[in-house]
Amino acid sequence: TLDTICQVAFGSDPGALRDPEASIPFADAFDYCQFCIDKSFFQPFLLWWRLFTPSGWEMRRCLTVVEDYARGIVRQKRQQYSTEKGRQLGASKNGADLLSLYIESEMVSTKKNDPNQGRTKTASATSSPLTDTDLRDVIMNFVIAGRDTTAQALSWSIFRMCIHLETQQRVREEVQTILSDPERSASIECQPLTYEELHKMKYLDAFCHEVLRLHPSVPKEAKLAMKADTLPDGSPVAAGDLVVFCPYIMGRSSHIWENPKTFSPERFLDKPKPSPFKFTAFQAGPRTCLGQNLALLEMKCVLANLVSSFQFTLEQPIDSVVHLPTITLPIKNGLKVSTKVL
Image (cartoon, rainbow, N blue to C red; front, side, top):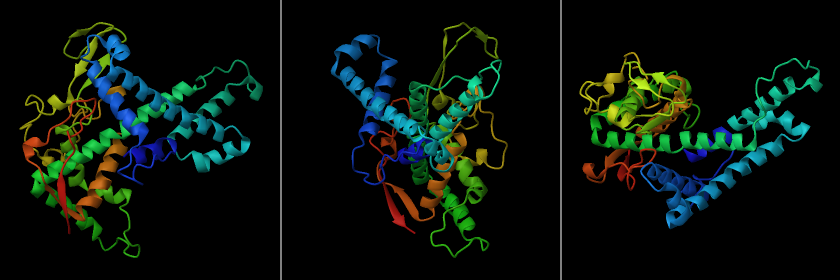
């Protein structure tokens, strides 16, 4: 997922898949920063901790690693667009990634609002040029949203397949039915699944939603009220209040879900999608996750390819599979499974 989001978001290949055993400094530093940020919510002496403890010093070192990596990508993209030839190549070569689209949009917006470009001075500027810091933040947000969250959702999916073998078999049968469709071209060896074929996998889609209900990749959320507001039940929210909700607990609440602790993809099968204010794995309202469809597509693509070729069996006690408290929801010490080629 690190390679995928880096290529999609800013056209960079960190090489995680080339050598899975190799350490990637950016990824390691990113992990440590996330761990420390989560702990800082419960640290009463935060400034002292960051300035005068070894772990605080290590976090500052890791922040420098992450910062240098992100700003290096921004500089590279800026250089690609610094020449007329580079701008012409943008749409075909660089524009395939999201960061390039940000830069192209900035260039178009700046040109439209520049009176020297043949426009009148009364034309109002709709946006200001993006700084390198703005683009650095874009990179960080894409990595935060697209790496750990999807990887951990896949891990919990494999766990659920291992302890619910009938569900694993039903997902496999659905995938194999679509793969055996006579209209599917057999002329291409290992033909990849198409978007349309993945869209037909309704049970797999329901399975992914049920996994995220019980194992939301972002298990806890907090929003700071910028101005006074009122919740739907009439509760007042003052400016500066921190409003916290917990998708992990909500997914297990009998006030929200029927038989909440029962793993049942059928609750999402052939039924209207539940309100995002009920199924909060991707948040709701103006803060709905922009990568929701990409995340679900990644999950279905990986799981469909794996389950059609392998039988998964859990190789550790069920009660030993627990999450590691952090900003996201990783499995502590990883997940130990065995595979059998079908």
